[in-house]
Amino acid sequence: MKTITPVLSGQRPKIPLFDLKRQYGRIAADVRRAVCRVLDSGAYILGAEGRGFEADFSRAIGCRHVIGVSSGTAALRVALKAVGVGPGDDVIVPAHTFVATATAVSETGARPVLADVDPETLTLGEPQLRAALTPRVRAAIPVHLYGYPADMDPIMALARKRGFKVLEDCAQGHLTAYKGRPAGSLGDLSAFSFYPTKNLGAAGDAGAVATQDDALAQIVLRLRNVGRAPRDSNRHEIVGYNSRLDEVQAAVLRVKLKRLGHWIARRRKLAALYDKGLAGLPVRTPLRGSGGTLHAYSLYVIRLDERDALAQHLAREGIGTGVYYPLPLHLQPAYRDLGYKEGAFPQAEQAARTGLALPIFPELREDEVRTICKAVRAFFA
Ligand SMILES: Cc1ncc(COP(=O)(O)O)c(C=O)c1O
Image 1 (cartoon, rainbow, N blue to C red):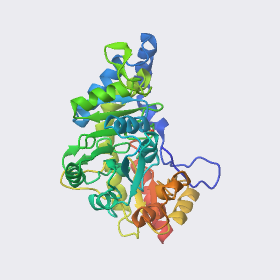
Image 2 (cartoon, rainbow, N blue to C red):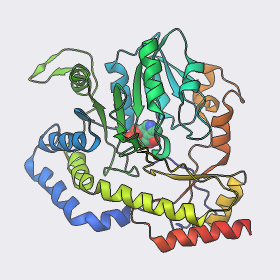
Image 3 (cartoon, rainbow, N blue to C red):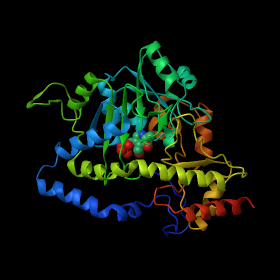
Image 4 (cartoon, rainbow, N blue to C red):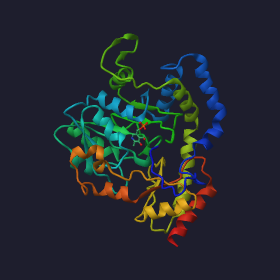
């Protein structure tokens, strides 16, 4: 995952923000067996592993169709193209998200139109979406940021009324729950990233598109594979991309998917420990959710005015942190041409100024969380 970690010396922190090697150490035998099975098979692209993963993940998120692609960005691009987004269209994107949510829109030739985020959830809310609507809006992309779900029901109601499509950006939303339903099954289409640090991470780049819609699934199948007809490889029915998921990544993902439920439960347990350990301090801890709406803690992001000073303090204590994202999209040089000014999206700007991600991953130990809470307490003492 893309991050800025304030590091004072060149040394690796004692407690890193992520530690992928800890996870690999626990599942190495299974991962190696799965990868060797692919290498021995001689089938490396669009084979049994990919199909198996698509079926497994479709069950996990309760969505009829899952189509593996080469990254989360590719998933967004393919999903946008599947609903016909292209030049002349506007797509609403929250100003506080990873830049790929917007670059995928730009790649289609459409214009990203930015919206502020809800001050509580930090995701795109219906009022912010409504305020950003333009006559040319073709789609909107709520992002389940840090693993907390966007409030999808009012967003879907507005979309149905105004005739635009909704694509969920689930890059950080694996097994996030919204009113008892898994993220990824709620919009017209959804885009998952399996970037290695995500809740479900591959051993490289990988992603998936999910949808309940049979016709859209057929289009996505073609778009990810240079427009090919599924049963005639020399017939190209639409102009597509090479955005395929490879077999090695699919095999790794299948091994990990079996443990995903357990890993998310562990993240929730660690988050509850943080919530308790940080109680009473002048920091805002993440929303927990209630009534079937559950955080999946892809990141555990606290908010405080002295963010940079706390990050420096934790770095001195050997604790890794990250800032997601220090510059909102409307202030990114790449999007200068959109013409937004500082102050345009106050909630996104505040989130960018105050958010600090503390270490969270399933293999993080409880004593490490206690050490981190103690270090945060010492900062305020
Ligand atoms: C919110 C969000 N959207 C999109 C992406 C893009 O995913 P990928 O890096 O797999 O292309 C990411 C991942 O970094 C993300 O966090």
